[in-house]
Length: 94
Image (cartoon, rainbow, N blue to C red):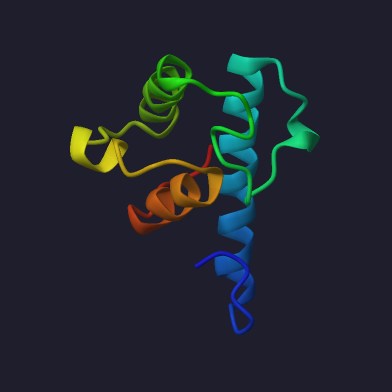
């Protein structure tokens, strides 16, 4: 879904905004500079352990006013998966 060759401008803009918000939340909770957080980064590469990942998911739920079911949360292992999951839910960026 992210960076498709034939993506339209609006879809690309939304993906970028979601990515920016996700990167901001990761940075806030880990002190990793936001510019080091890429869409292809795995939680492991970013040094997030299971507690960090759980904290991130709570932050995402609060930021986007949604609930991520446990079975879905367990599938999210990298930034791209998080962004695509949020796009699938059609989240709005404030």
